[in-house]
Length: 93
Image (cartoon, rainbow, N blue to C red):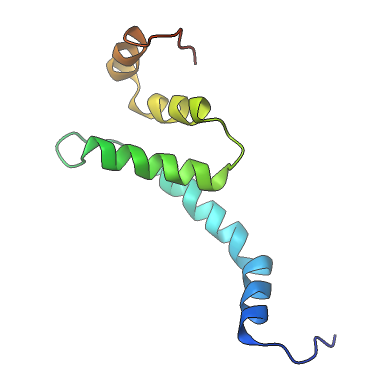
């Protein structure tokens, strides 16, 4: 297989295309799944936007509403119920 002479940016792109995407997606998904909000340790907005950025990177076509619902489900229980009660428009999961 002859790729000829290419610069660093071409090789970097090839390596990322071939190997990095799957591993990166796996790590990003695990980070999202394992992140559990702890009110004593986490700042709410920082935690929320970290989760939002992870989901947006994994699923760029996902609507904000769906992203918000996925994050909301991670809070579960009373948090989810309290937020749904305060929604201006009907919220469903």
